[in-house]
Image 1 (cartoon, helix red, strand yellow):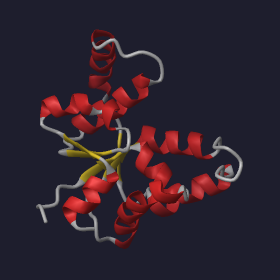
Image 2: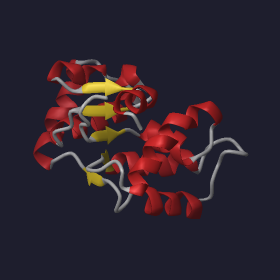
Image 3: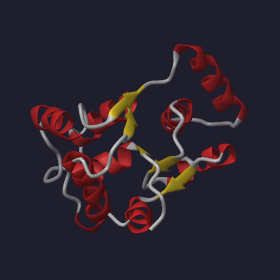
Length: 157
């Protein structure tokens, strides 16, 4: 088992970890259960991820969709107060936008670029996401990008 670095959690982990989605929820749920139980400490996420979780959870297809009240409760019980909630520092916002232009980031991918830059600004060493290809740019800064399953396996959760 490797030495545990506190992870930065992406929206994809919050969604699959807090809303039952079959096999996709196994590793993500393991991570979030460890956070809530206090076995996984110093975990961080972005405020943007909290808002994105709320937006997605309340607009999923029927059968998976939750009400605004449930989405809020899930965040309160499992994220807020359990993880450090990061935001992109004001001084880094224009550089984030300039980087998006330089890297030809278009459409909704700008949101993942924002989350990635928030993780980098927060000093993350590991980003856990099930959308790895959206975060591979972080590797040039020495930040590991791992799936939930890789994280659970490597750190023995």
